[in-house]
Length: 421
Ligand code: HEC
Ligand code: HEC
Ligand code: HEC
Ligand code: HEC
Ligand code: HEC
Image 1 (cartoon, helix red, strand yellow):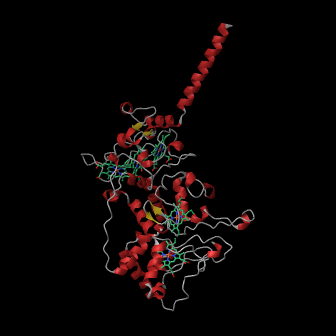
Image 2 (cartoon, rainbow, N blue to C red; image 1 turned 90 degrees about the vertical axis):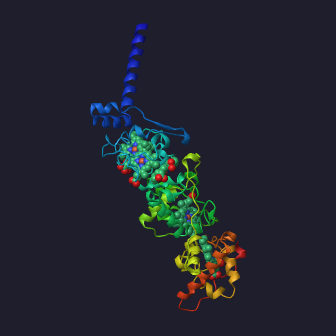
Image 3 (cartoon, rainbow, N blue to C red; image 1 turned 45 degrees about the vertical axis):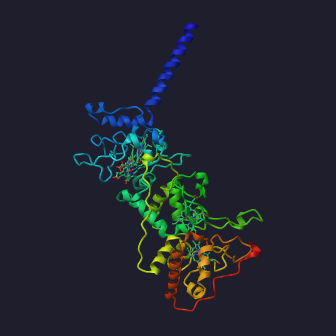
């Protein structure tokens, strides 16, 4: 009896052993390692360690196992053309003493790992999981030019790395030029009509103002941002009264305007938005941003135009103040008013104009008092627009009427609908 038990248990042990061996050798990464090793000469093999590879960067609290598959990433002499066996591209200027391009001179692997630039999931050893392409991992892999999104968390002074981050800088310029600051703040600059975007590159998916159900796969931060920029209303289409229980107020579609951005502009803005992250890196990794130099303007009007763009007035009033932004249920033709007539109304009352700009004007009167409040209103900047800038703005706004052929229509000021608010 004892003997039988011994035999059965031994057999079981053998089966388990074979099973675990098979399972181990069929793991995804072992397949990649085998394929890579097969391409090497015997002498070369000795220099390559196998098994799970990891880089521990304690200063950044990171453990990155990417080199388990990306075996030739720092060995150009062994690299193949195919992923994951390529060697890393060198940044412009990263050359060894013979002048050959050499990766990881500026950012040694042992000090930076991989995920500090590429995102993804450092500890994972399967392709999808490592590249962040799994549920509940909110840090997708940054490929190609998207990697530029990570440089700013350390290189606060982007001027020093200007030539390396063209998409990032383009995205930042677009953010200003399109007037995103008119509705969104980033930390201490911008308006509070909508959410602060200071951490949109890292904030939890649960806190973003729309869910993934309204868009096709892949469901990650990169594609969500692209969708938001390209088609803002498809993510927040609103709810019509007939879709809601009786008595509930309808919900308007997103007030975020459709900007008609090109694919390239969407990509650049996405890089910039992904770069807006909460981060607390050690000081030894970080350079501080320098204040931007004050530009020089040829005239007061030119300065005023720059102020108009800088404070995001274009977002609601259109480029050049020509108007046309939709504002559902607003008293003035469901649009944000154009500013071409400002001179006619305010020429003899400049103080009132300045007060509209400083104090804003809200709420915007409703067209139909039974429908919800229009989502857009004139926000207040208070004393955050310096007096000289307000004067320049006034000069610019007055200059807009020069483009007008006809007499102005009735003033935009409609009595506030106090009854329905
Ligand atoms: C289990 C193996 C495996 C692991 C672990 C792994 N990768 Fe990959 N990686 C691949 C394969 C296979 C590809 C090619 C297929 C693809 O692009 O998804 C690839 C492609 C990439 C690319 C795209 C290259 C290009 O431009 O085409 C990047 C960037 C990358 N990996 C970075 C990482 C980083 C960073 C990590 C660690 C967080 C990592 N990988 C971990 C297998 C792996
Ligand atoms: C300092 C930031 C930085 C670090 C750290 C970094 N990378 Fe990259 N990586 C880049 C940049 C920039 C590119 C080029 C992107 C592009 O195509 O414009 C790149 C490209 C790649 C590619 C694509 C290769 C190709 O031929 O285009 C792979 C794969 C990759 N990195 C993997 C890794 C792995 C694995 C690590 C860790 C060992 C790592 N990277 C660490 C910045 C970094
Ligand atoms: C985790 C922080 C970190 C990230 C992310 C990072 N860097 Fe760096 N980078 C550094 C540090 C630290 C140095 C070394 C600075 C020094 O010693 O002067 C450096 C050096 C450099 C240098 C050479 C030094 C110089 O000023 O000539 C360049 C160029 C550079 N980084 C570009 C980039 C680019 C491009 C990216 C994004 C793809 C990037 N870095 C991402 C921290 C980082
Ligand atoms: C007229 C106001 C307005 C302007 C201008 C505007 N947005 Fe928005 N944005 C919104 C509103 C309102 C939301 C809240 C969600 C919704 O209703 O879609 C939003 C949401 C977002 C979100 C999602 C943030 C989150 O955490 O959920 C991003 C990202 C964003 N906007 C980027 C931009 C960018 C980039 C620009 C400039 C190209 C811009 N927005 C211009 C009104 C605006
Ligand atoms: C979030 C959208 C939004 C932004 C950004 C915005 N405005 Fe307005 N603005 C409005 C709305 C809506 C009205 C109409 C208010 C009403 O119906 O009384 C308005 C009204 C005005 C008026 C009064 C027009 C009139 O005919 O009386 C002026 C002047 C004006 N805005 C200037 C500006 C300037 C300058 C900026 C930038 C500093 C700016 N606005 C930014 C939405 C905006």
